[in-house]
Image (cartoon, rainbow, N blue to C red):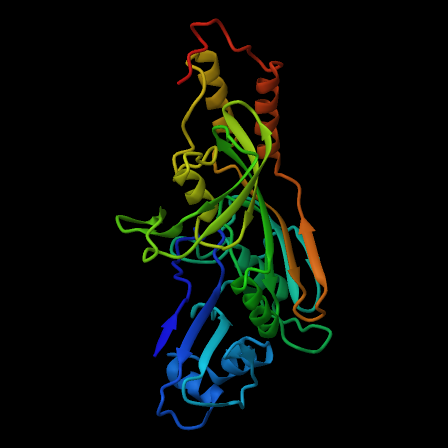
Length: 362
C-alpha cells in the first residue's frame, strides 16, 4: 500500500512559493520477503533511477519507521517507508543565456540570488528563454566545484515571475536532495514583505486553508477548509505598518504552496496591492473623492504587479551544517508606493482627506 505527496507542477511560469520535491510513503505488505530498500523503491516508484534513490539514502531522506536507513537496508513486513527526493529536471534542453543576475552568495554547493520582478524562474510554455534557469545554466556551464564535481543549476523552490527577492538554487544533486528534505520538513525559514488591502484587528495572525487549483481556471489557486481539497497550507503574518486602507505585513511561510500568500490573503479579504489575478489591482477600499481615486490609480501604475517581495531566507547548509541567513532590500517600485501611502496616512501627502462629502468610505 502506498500514498504520494508529490507536488503538482505546471509549466505556466507561475509557481509562487512552490517547493520542488517529491514525497512517497509506503507500508510494506505482510508477505514481503527481505529485499534491499533501494531495489524495493525502484520497483514501487515509476521512472526513478537507482542513483536518485541512493542519493536520497546518503542524504538521510529515506526513513523506515521514522529512522533513517542506508540504501542496503533490508525491508521487513509492515515497515513504514518514507522517502523525499528533489523533483527531477524537465526533459528538455535549457538554453544557456548570458543574462545578468544579482548573486548574493555562491559556494561549491549552492547559489543565493536576489531575483528581480518580471523574471520567470523556470522555462515552460511561452517562456523557454529569458528565465532564471537559462541565466544560471550559462553561468555554470562546463564548471566543476573545488571538489572536482560537475555543477549544474538545480532548483529547490520557486517564486512567481512578478515577485522579487531571495531564491535558493543547488549546484549538486546531493545539495538539492538535502535541501528538499528541509523544505519538506518546513525547517527553512522564509519571510516575505507584502502590501495588502485593508486594515487588521490584530497585529499578528495565522491563515490556514488547503490550497488547490481552481477547476475552472488552472492558473488560479483556491482556498478551502475541506481537508480533501488541495494541500495543507499555513501562512503566519505580522503587521509592520498601517496606512488606513492598506497595510504592510511580514509573512512567514510554514508551508510552500503555489500562490500561497496571494491566495490566502485574498481568502481573508485582504488581496495584495496590485495583484491582477487575485483582485488587488483595483481600488478595493478607501475614500470616494476623485483625488483619492487618482492617488490609487497612480500607485497602481507605479506598481503594476503584486506588492510581494521574498525578503529573507534561512536554512542549514547542505554540506557544512552551518545555519545560513540572507535578506534583501525592497525593490524601488515597492519602496516608492509604500512611501506614498505613508505620506497619505500621515496627512502630509499630495492631498488631505477632503471635505466631509469626500470622506465617504467606499
